[in-house]
Length: 246
Image 1 (tube, rainbow, N blue to C red):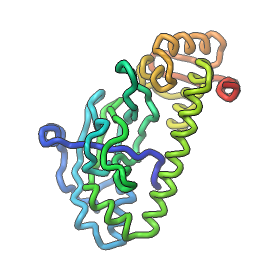
Image 2: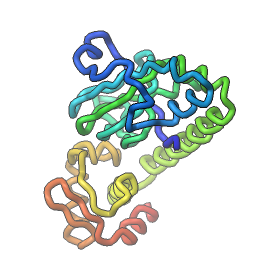
Image 3: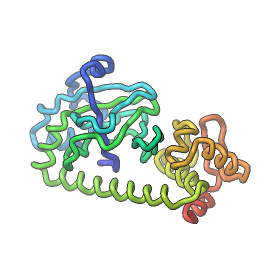
Image 4: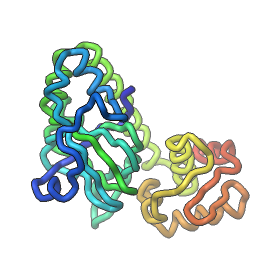
């Protein structure tokens, strides 16, 4: 299935030489077959894919805001943050990318440059396909087109909802919403926090100091358990009420 995030990766020659794993890997033999592969096979275009597998270390930039889009990327493993640059070098994290998220498909909808930055939060393994091939599939295959349109619509709705939340909610509600969001991404109320406390603040549109303070409050109130990088939501229903109350 297609997931809700569409971002981008820019590959300079120097970057590609440094992180290239397997150029033009045979998709038929790959264990991570994606929707792009299945659609090209249906259309008899699989020979045009010529995917390139690339890896990024923690904190390395996967895409840079305003640079040109060249590839559609499938995030095979690891996770990354998608963020925008604000005033005074401040950042706002709009979402976390998990395995099976596609990166770089905004070009299909008329945006030739990256609207966001994407940086690896952990070691990330990606599979990359020339964006022109994906554009060709989009215009020639109705089912593929519908799938992307629906996913893009969900992504837009999600971002609009987050913007309203960041603008109108109080600090505790913002942190509660972020914790619930992370639990949903990991499909578990107990998960490893790959974000730093500062990044949790950026995800919640507050300072890192306020994020630490609210986490401490939630811990004292018995709403969460924090042990190192591991977070467990002990009273998710209460956190949801805090988030809903704004």
